[in-house]
Length: 421
Ligand SMILES: NC(=O)C1=CN([C@@H]2O[C@H](COP(=O)(O)OP(=O)(O)OC[C@H]3O[C@@H](n4cnc5c(N)ncnc54)[C@H](O)[C@@H]3O)[C@@H](O)[C@H]2O)C=CC1
Ligand SMILES: O=C([O-])CC(=O)C(=O)O
Image (cartoon, rainbow, N blue to C red; front, side):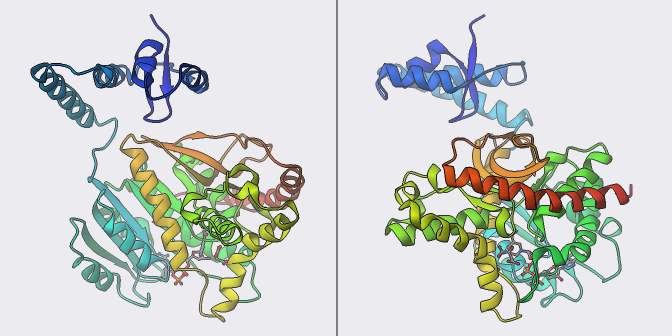
């Protein structure tokens, strides 16, 4: 049987014949061969039928000028197969997702809920918060319910002192994605680490309820300190027999900032800049890899240390500018929605690459932020770091020293706690 390789462009496995036919005329033969070499060899059988359908579609697409009747027939066939694929439940069809924002009436929660309600892939959006939130979640839901979008928005409230596991059955059942900005933000003078005890307990309550009502959902944790809370929650998931890779630490704001600041320095549109940011989400653990973006790598080497520091300190700059009235909310909502939409696209079978902080074996640390591939089950691949400049290599050592301590706090929390049934 001919070897199949997975095209990262659409995540489907093809034979060389199908692959080269499809790209012939678009790229030179050498480029197609080089791209083929980069594709992973397909193992297993799960997507064989789908791959075959897609491969047929791909080959058909590449065939020059089929007769109109044959073309229509082929189109109908491809459509029927696409429908069968959607119904096979391996991937969810577009526009069918249920999303919950926990802490959805807070500073990040409200704009994040709005951006997710605007996403055409979201069918149902749940806004969950406490009765002491600045706005009742039912009010946020009523407000967002007037946007001219198809998403149905519902509010869920819980009294302080109660447990999410006793209150969120309806809210969480059927969720594909749960975004969690629930928790205390920093005030000037505090580190993210200072928030650990209070926020870990808040996150645990929510994660416990997710483990019970939507164990297959992807959980995007925004709540700080991400560096410790993600290991804590992922290990609690693991202890319960669930997949720790369902727990995803959201570090997208660091990427957004690195892109913006690189755009400011180079005069280029940040929309076309994509600087991977690795390590973690606090102080020196934030390591932007400017050398890996085609625009950012043109920045003078002597400007890089300051630019790096600017990204590391950006959260603190916002905390100080808000003078005790919170931390980044709007840019965080933007960044959270960017990741949330990519996760939903992945669940639909459209592979997406984003940086995120997850359980990882690409370094000697058990949790690390790096490029991650999102696919049909959430995180489908944690990608290697790639080539680093000498400056970045040196910084990586500093990252690891600080990050290790923060991961260890999370692991200790997971040892001392467990999720209720
Ligand atoms: N990962 C990142 O890049 C960033 C993370 N953050 C973090 O996000 C978190 C939230 O920040 P903000 O939205 O500004 O705070 P906020 O105080 O404005 O909102 C937090 C919301 O969580 C709710 N909440 C608290 N306990 C809850 C519980 N047990 N269940 C449900 N809801 C609960 C509160 O009622 C409030 O509405 C903070 O920990 C902050 O440090 C902030 C910016 C960036
Ligand atoms: O700095 C904070 O406390 C909030 C945060 O994580 C950020 O803005 O990056």
